[in-house]
Image 1: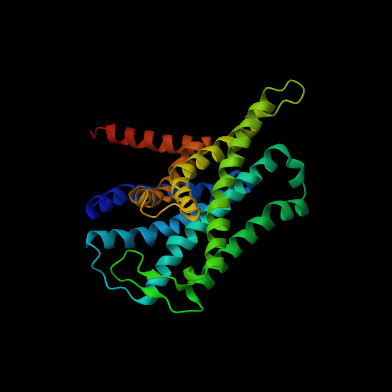
Image 2: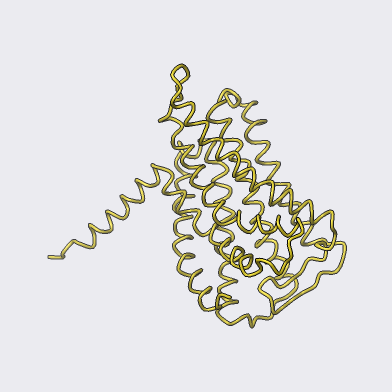
Length: 299
């Protein structure tokens, strides 16, 4: 069991740099015309915005909870908002990126599918908008308009147990459709992209324009690796429990996987910076400039 003090400091150490890095990445992705028009950056922009919302709401709330050892009287409305951000936005984040792993194959190997405005709308914008609205509406209805009475647990960090979790069909759909399938999609399509890029790169007759697509490939695989490290273990344990594994088996491991899953959003901005050469260069220039300023000796 991780102590509240350790959790508090482990989150705080990463939170402030994560917020700064998120603002830095979003600023350049939104205001740099080339980056903003890149179709492969649109999903990244949305997931970074979702992550930033969590950074300035959910994580400070968790810090307060752990700082005062869970002694915090919260209203039912606040608890519902908490669970919506904690789980609803987290799942939205994951579902959108799972689509990005599919779309990246289209952008790299079938770019003619997005060669016109109409094609871009149906292949790129429509799936992204549909998935975003589906997830938001699903969890808004699930959390704020339940058909039964929720159970509020003020002593727990997630201070509400949604009564709709008792509906077996809904729970199965939410678990399989929103957790297991997105994670498997990220895993399968990321591996497929890696293998496909290597295969195309070394083909003699149909060489891929490696320099053109290298950034898109590295960006997606880097973020996929982050998802698989921090989200896959918890999803795997959920799948095992659904298959009949006793909840007493691996209970401590499952608790740790849930704890470390919160680092995915905190670390995502740093991975985005490192995976995009333009942002990596700009960040290095800023750091280099700061070092030069520090070494200036006033006369």
